[in-house]
Image (tube, rainbow over all chains, first blue to last red):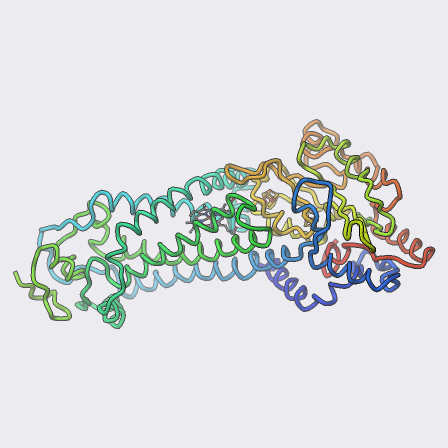
Length: 340
Length: 198
Ligand code: HEM
Ligand code: SF4
Ligand code: SF4
């Protein structure tokens, strides 16, 4: 952590000192108390401009075929380092820890959300094989991508001290390969998810009611009506589709270096990739919780695809009515007396 | 303890590329990788300047700070080295390095870029000094032989200086005093300024 602080401080100094840094060298290194002279004895005014330009990244020529060889100094690397090792890593860690704490508190306070009425023993099909296959393709690849990606960002601080440098480097090397290839599975999963479900995820009026009642998450017997997907699920859907598109694009740019831009673009893509990845990891941890331990009956939807009718009535009343060909019950919390 | 530094006197460099060639030959650097390069600013125009650049062995080295597998280390003399057995070829050190020093055997990241390679200040790597493994991965270890980097030794105009930072800046100061001008110790601000540690 202290080195992050140092890096952030260095970046600040860098920004504040940009003008000063633009000057030709001032060797302030402690080991060379005697700074090289001549700094103030430039022979022409033009010289100072040349050095300033170099410091700011002007490109010269070199005899090498590498198109980036002509740049002498790229200061953006220091900002990239300071941002990635600093705020991105720090706030990312806080966000990940934060969601875990929130979920533990939620579990302690609310417990597992159970059915409010007895189960009927009847089930309805919620997701077919294609929908479930797509979900698990996306989810499985996401989990591996998230673990291997977070390992690239945090493993050095968390895992390396535990398993040692050799084992950690081998693991991270394999993780990188997995990350690079599974990215395509994830992108395919997100694309099919989008095609299959976009028509069920268009925002509508009922979503406002759902939000106003916080989805009934915090109270028993409160069940705002929803169609196939409630407002919370729509948020997850759009976060996955938009986040997935962003991760896919920036991920591809990282995968094929300099095909999508220069070095500064690469640094930018890398940071965007990390920020979106962290945000998505936080959202998906919440999603995993509510789809497993958090709510009775929820997992079946993606497990067998068959959900208990009472569960469907409580959480997706409008959808259940649609599936069963019933008329839609106009009452807002209408799970008590369904027309049957 | 000496703090090793490079200094390229831009008022002397004539872009002969002897340093580049000497380095490639001494370390049998693979095709496509150049640990040192010469860059010319304002080529063919008034105010033309050439500068030989390689890894500057920075204080508080950015490459070291961002490496996901933490494979860099800095010797007591300030030389920044890395362990190729640990490197996963992610390219992060290249994003962070101000001087474009890290190089890769392959251009693409799909699969891998290969192990990163850069100037070692002719100090080899973590394998035993003068071992076959060290030579194959990092090149010759001249420092262990009591010698300084070959690029500077071969420099035809002695524009490129390598060695203890205090001695290097003394030599440079003498030159500036004698000739009455100097362009400044190029890159020192970026490599060694505002940075803590050795
Ligand atoms: C969609 C396809 C994806 C592609 C093509 C992709 C590609 C990449 C690449 C090339 C890197 C650079 C490091 C390396 O070479 O391993 C990277 C880093 C990373 N990726 Fe992905 N990725 C994708 C999806 C994801 C997902 C879904 C997550 C997790 C939620 C994720 C999280 C990360 C993280 C945390 C890093 C490290 C960032 C850092 O070190 O600052 N990526 N990714
Ligand atoms: S010049 Fe680049 S590779 Fe060398 S120590 Fe500095 S940041 Fe690292
Ligand atoms: S390319 Fe190798 S040395 Fe450079 S940051 Fe990645 S793992 Fe570290």
